Amino acid sequence: MLVCERAIRHFLPSTLRPLLFALPLLALYPAYSQAELYKYANEDGVTVLDSHVPARYVKNGYTILSLDGRVLEIVPRALTDEEIRVRDIRLAEERKRERIAREQKITDQNLLRIYSTPEDVIRARDTKLASIEGFINTSQSNLLRLETQKRDMESQLANIERSGGKISKERVSQVRTIENRIRQNEREIKEKRAEKDELAASFSADLKRVRELYDTRNTSV
Image 1 (tube, rainbow, N blue to C red):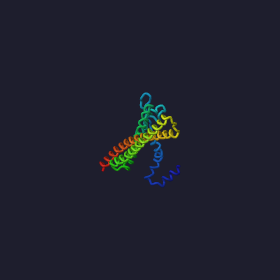
Image 2 (image 1 turned 135 degrees about the vertical axis):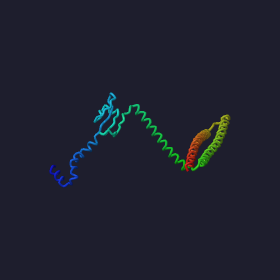
Image 3 (image 1 turned 120 degrees about the vertical axis):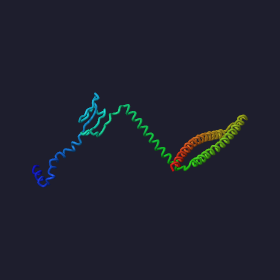
Image 4 (image 1 turned 90 degrees about the vertical axis):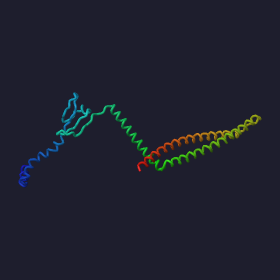
């Protein structure tokens, strides 16, 4: 090592030779600059500076300092069970709000693809509701016809019984068939009325939202 230093000193200009004495110190500088101090409070509330934080104080939080006193990092204290519960509830609510906002954005985009103006919603609503109302009216006419047929057949069966005749199984089956068709018509009318109410409510919500989006879009232009 000594020979190397003498050789280097021989070939170096005289102005650079003092750097040879600084090289060992420079080699140690990175380790020195990376050294840290830890500031924490002990059980008596006294602030302590040390080269490490005892395990029992870690949960209370601490501060990491450089040797020249600069704050490198602040490690917060551990949360209590109640604080964790409150935090989790808040995070869940935030995620829910974000999900609702994303879903609303997709719904708005779909609405604007289907309807350019509020009038488009009104026309679609009227067309759809008119179609359902037409189905209900037709079903009600069929229901009245079936009920009339049933009364006529029941009247015929009653006359047969009064005259001492025997009612055939075929006639009884015909009455049962008409009764089944009546119940089916009644069920379909009930379902269509419920569908009409649901569609009316849905179109009402769509119309309100499209008006809001349409006003916002026109205002921003």
